[in-house]
Length: 550
Image (tube, rainbow, N blue to C red; front, side, top):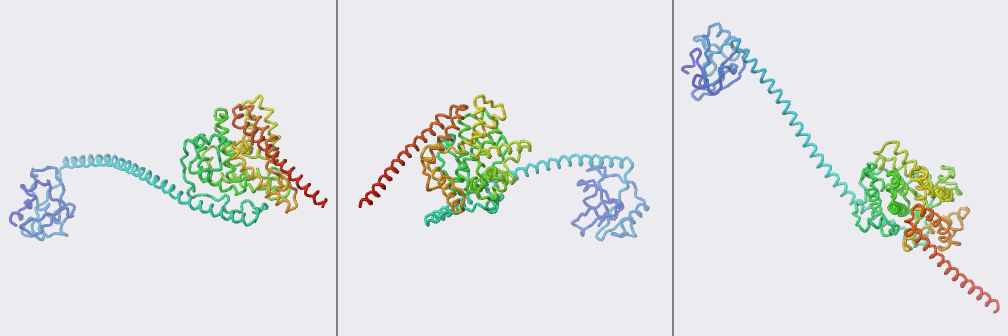
């Protein structure tokens, strides 16, 4: 303890030899414990006097003025709560030793120096602190961007994987349905289709699809891509998922997805909703939708319409072709009007089916998850909507003569800059595609005739059971395949395609000539049928005459 009892003495570690660590001086002005030091030859010595940095620097002992008893009295008064005064000396004691005396308050110049140092330090810390925080924020933003990108990539991958799982379920459902239909047909039961129905009752119809698109992404071969542009494309070798992928490819290939800023996932959902809203009729089904759309895609390439029409016109043609027979019940307008169905009442007997197709098409587009036109301006959408309605209504065969006559008047002086001319052309084009099956090779076209006759026979059977008028070309007891096709090809198909040929001569070899060949084919079949009927008639007459002689 020797040396600690002297006024002005320094504790070990803070004296003249030991103060080199920090230039500290003792100040009792704050009355708090700010520093503690332990010495090996004493007990733990706690210095209950606030220590602060002095301006004297390191390695140089400060020169304190001589301490007065009054100063020590002030010193004692400020720290009496944690230490006591030794009555025999001018020093302050702790429980384990004697504390050295305090340093006097700094002189006014020293205070200014302190103030400047503190002020400069404050501004430096504040400035560099803001810069540092900005750098940290920028770094964190980049980290968040990277993390979000990675998460989105993972989610997209999961979406595709989940879509593949759903495909198998849908395929199993379709297989079961086919088996059920096959069993029903073998049992001799005829499928009954209720036509007086509420068209929105079916829970499957117009149901919002927020789930993953349920068909996988197929990669089309180059051969398929080239064949897809031709009228000879065989539509019978493709399943629904593959047809959906082909339709999706058409929209991408024509540049419609890019031009109208369509979301690719929304395009998938829209195509799925379209497929689900085609019924499983013998003829007016989703395969017929694909057939018409593929023919439209082929005519766009064959007639080089991309250079003659606008991208909006391309979009209108393709979308109208895809939607033109949505939710067709399998019974034509004549039946709807004669049976006074809900559709006929709703649309006042004016093209009830075609009006219904338009309504269903835009009900699907009204769903946000299926709206492929969500990213275009309102005025553009109104224009597209009106044009699609015009084209779908033009597919009513009751208006065939009116539309064809209008086009004939314009074709000789056709002007692609005239809106009325282009509108009339688009109406004729969708009509050509809608009834273009006979343009395809015989092995592709003939099954469609069988499907159409089956649907006609279903309607005529129903009309007979309900006591309604029956059209002769639908009566299974009167019509044959050759008689049904010859008149249709000669008086409807060939005149219309030959009129279009005046504007696009390149279709003669690929589209018009196959129609002529098909007409000749069915005329030969009719001659054979007539000869067989005549022979059968003679045989029956001879048998009846022989019976009379006996």
